[in-house]
Image 1 (cartoon, rainbow, N blue to C red):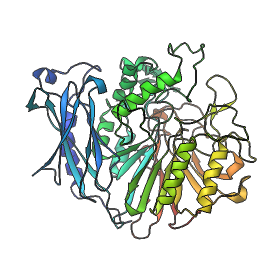
Image 2 (cartoon, rainbow, N blue to C red):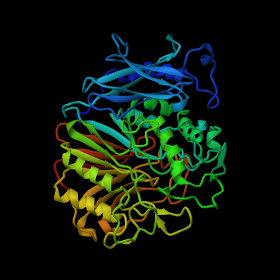
Image 3 (cartoon, rainbow, N blue to C red):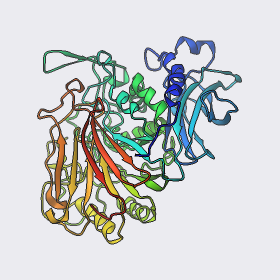
Image 4 (cartoon, rainbow, N blue to C red):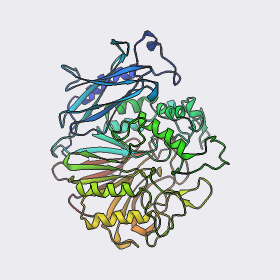
Length: 528
């Protein structure tokens, strides 16, 4: 394909990440390192960039104390004639995190940036700069697009294991030099405590790095914040964040397993003293907004939203869904009328409008849950459904009604180039949906690709629901439940769009980067 890495990027990372790597993290979350005692703020949690477009992007940092965030950008790693951006004054109200929006950037260029944290009382006193880099989106299509996706990090008690080198999958992803990474939800497992050790089936022991906030399920704002800080203790993740910008969505484990608005936690779940999911979700949402650079969601902004469209030049639009915030209650999902569904009416209409407006060759629908895979909700031992499909292969019921409406809309408006990407189920697979196999037939064929987890327990493949006629073309999943990352079954996906032909190639990869499955799709088609 015509995608080519920018020259010198590897040397950029060796140099720019050295500063971040050299900054030893606090030995305990909230502890002040020795460097901070000198009065200079420190950014030991690394940097992140998010939702990068042709001319803009967000840069994130966390300080160890109150500080003024300053970002400098340049065309080269030497930072000759840098452009300076005055960021926010960051403090305890945002857990010392801050985000600065960069605008007016040159399109299709490698942007080098560095974040300085200045003493609010003496701007001349700045901490050691922490550097990162990203590519802005080109205005033309010739260079092509490459991005990766996956989800589910530090689930089921499998945390940062120093014996295995931590979150190793990020090393393999970084080697592919993507334009961005799509995180398909479950960025943290706020409902999953991390203990010092876990027993392995072979008699061995899995050893975790631990923190106080990860010793129990998250309920307070401080505990939710601590879940995000926990993952940033991993060197591989911090290095990846400094190299690759992200597009991030959320799912259930940022709050609690299988949550929905209005839910009240059963009294039998003694892990939780706070029983209102709405209260927990508000705290989790605030922590998420503080630690994740999303332009439509700002710290403390209750009106902001996670769903959005991120445009990546003429070849690609990414439609980021939120299948958690607006859903109805989990139930047997067999109702014959369901206007709220899994997206809510407002988000569905937004998605329709944006799909019609899109002029991109490819329209990736980033869903945090699969469509035709039956995902049960066994939280309270009831026959409830967590995702869309409920296992009845007949006419659409429950949340399937909303998806049927969307698929019918895509067909009748002749919207080309739709591809569905998701994670959630902790294995990798490719499903092809075909009307000739389906009970509901008023749609065009499409593909859904699943990948993950990044570092969590792996699980057997879910059953398929025949309503939309899915065929499992490929799957790799364990036969046992909750297989540790030491046992394999950690996955990510890769998408390449060729700038000349417009072909889209999906590769499903293992933790070390080995390609398991490849599918090539042709541009300009309503369905395929």
